[in-house]
Image (cartoon, rainbow, N blue to C red):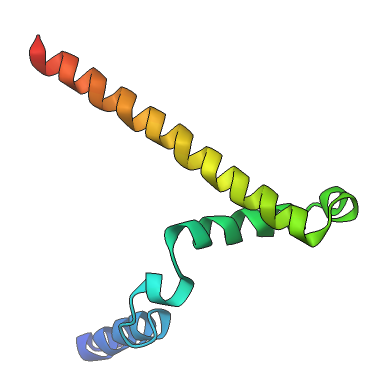
Amino acid sequence: MSSEKDYQQLIYYVLSSFTKDGTPLNALVGSKLEWQVTTIMAGLLSNPNIVESLDPEQIVDASINYANIIQERLGHYQNAQIHTLEKLIDQ
């Protein structure tokens, strides 16, 4: 059975490896938009039909457009939530 110290060292090692010794995640992957675009692009690239029908620049543009649409829709959703909460508070 492992000791508590071994367990703590293992946790420290895992976290240290994941964050490159404490480097913030946004420093490793760039901005939120870059992370979203990269993730969306990976999804698009996994679809052979899209890869065959679009140029690389078009796939990047599509990824950026999808990320912007997602942000816009999330903004609408968050505003609706705030409006609903304000209505509940006013009652």
